[in-house]
Length: 118
Image (cartoon, rainbow, N blue to C red):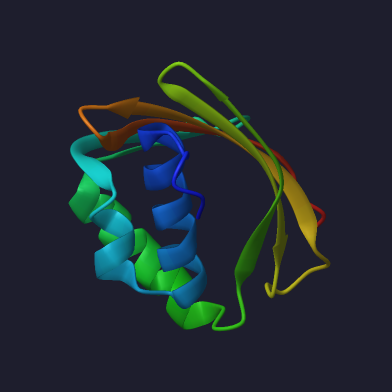
């Protein structure tokens, strides 16, 4: 990662690297204890690191080949917007947009806008 990367880009990149290694501890450490994760079109809102740890550990176990690749990233203030290509699940690869909000150096909110082809 270039030395000129912003703190927002550093934490977002760190969580993606941990996600792709399926290192659930390193992954959730990038998020605030009270993180909120929203998936567009879903009434469910995921709250907190421990819920996140359980959900992502189960997903990593179910899809050991799961990987996300950033195709575009935009950083504005305390926000990062990633377009990602997700592969290695049961269906064909799909694109998602992840909108991250960073507070006090950790990811405090994520909104996923997906075009999942499952």
